[in-house]
Image (cartoon, rainbow, N blue to C red; front, side, top):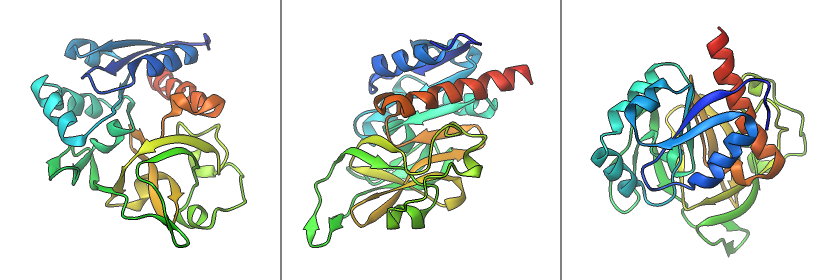
Length: 236
């Protein structure tokens, strides 16, 4: 564990996330993370993580049933880091076409769509996309499978500050985010001939389609960088 300075975090528990592995990653980074759906605990936290595994519509239905939709938006408005992971990334957007049309939290303008027959040459790839893929600074780098792994300057003040361009991260998903504004995309990734936005950052709202907690040392360092962002804000 990194004990230089701790941060108090909340992992939002709505029954649709890989909570144990995220909590373990937080602890390694020096984040004292509480798994809870309690709104008071959420609002008192230095940072919040919104996980998610499953279907978009089910996730939003559950968040509404637990009266967590408005508190999550209120937390985002505090300026403290709000981090979405996998499905937690997707529901930060305005809506999804997964099993019908569903409205999301709307914190990042854009929609969530399904992979549409991604291919390598004439071979159609399986959906979901499961496995290790590279994250790149730009669409063109992702499309070309670039060789320049220099750390992008624009990642310096983000949770990717210690990550090299082209680093492999672990993905499990059939849908992906399409932000209205490409400027909020932190990274791009290719799955066959489909290039998709694999992480987002809009102010203090940060989101990853991949699973940092399942992405070896590089992925775990993302949690440490999130803690640094939270504790820097506290000192400021």
